[in-house]
Length: 464
Image (cartoon, rainbow, N blue to C red; front, top):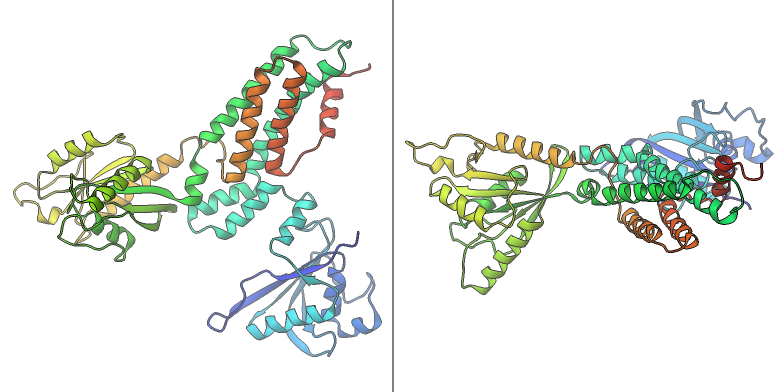
């Protein structure tokens, strides 16, 4: 089948407001080196081109070249050119790159020259990465890591994406697939070769392998670090009315995201802002003041506040330091469905209004703060970052689950393993184990039936 040569701008499109210093145009496909010659040697287009054309530099060696319009022979720009031989390229195909100046006119003229050459077409979204997958340069999890790296907005998102792009999830899922293949091979051998001299205790090995695999998948499914990094850690600001919750939200967001008023009950709905907290993506939610009310709208706001507090990863309990904050703290903690000192932080706001003779001292039970002046903010931020870091370290021995697609496949695999462990017949257990392996293989894009035979004959020497 004839594979098309594709091209695309690999750097952001320059605009009038933001012209780029450099732009990179990438090509992939069997005619990529040929296109490179035609664009950098105007006479080559008229006389034809062969692999021995002197205009083609050595592979993987960047050279200075002038880029021409192949039809008119007019110079477009002077930059750098390089090409890569298959399969030693990012996509596994012949590839070429043009590193040009980043002006709009330069990039536009270069892309138009490629279009007029009529030897390649514009790449579809993600087509370079898809070709790399099809040529076994990466698996689906690594491809998703590339997409996550491009979309990363915080330092921790960047680290997770790079970890996945480097194959951390691939290695974990391949280890599970290897364990599953070995277990299934034992079952298949018992079914297909009942008269052979198979190793003793094969039933226990099958049971142990399936049990271990199911337990590891269950632990992976319970790990929410990846989802928290993709969607943001949820931090709920809760407390009584007029404690300064909205002021704290504005202080942390560094903008007027919520209305601040002396009137109690101003906040009726949940107000969210997205923050970068020491590299951790955070969704910070201001909620309605927790109190009894006859107002139907405020009652709904309180209900939503309690629901958000229950679902949050971390909570900031904001109290008024100028009032009976210790009594308010006791009442709110008693009314809270759960209280975890590692995930719940008491913020003692309005310390600028607290009695001078009875200043609030810093301590483990409360973080003193003035949302008006910002006093105490560095200490609160440090504590929040530390709490977020501890939360994200839970289960850090393995790379976290990162996508709903992975979760769906692993839930399916976990259920199939559960059925295999209680199957009344060996054939039914083998079928469920095959379904589990197929589900795991869908995550990485690797489902190879022939590997099963390799494991059977390697482990048992059938037909000796």
